[in-house]
Length: 223
Image 1 (cartoon, rainbow, N blue to C red):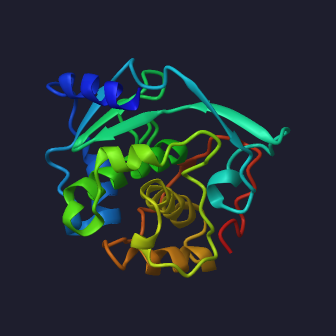
Image 2 (image 1 turned 90 degrees about the horizontal axis):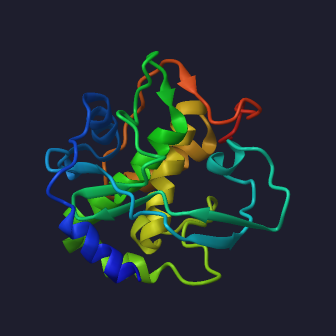
């Protein structure tokens, strides 16, 4: 199924929009010169997220998980929001937006920026595939029934490239969350050190932040 979807998405890769200036700035602050943002294209693609997947509720030990309300069941269901193929990001229509890094009021839409960072990590993996060994088939193989490929241990001392491809993308996503909300936190520092093994992460611009849930407790969230 995933191979069929990949072939269909390749046929749709002729159009799409480039990164906005704010999105390109975010990419540069995360990856530095290790990612070329120029060929990246974002596509509003209705073929993405047609089926649901079920996974065990993740522990609320990461910035990412603490941005939303506490889970009420041992399992959650969801749909894939984006698929990266080479330099092309195919995004579910209800997730797609004109700018993932800046709202009209000037605020950083944190959840959207984290999503973009996750997907751009797959582009980075592709552009640096001699280093990462990345291929769409390999990352697709991480998606198996009953397995959550995005789950990672924020306390481990593994090398960045020792993580799975989806875990690597989740780590960059977590870095955006921590750097935005708790730039001086201990986990933020650890993530910066981890990402610096293979990319060039920097601080995010300071300014207003839009959270996905008003009840999120952000003080010391990455301490």
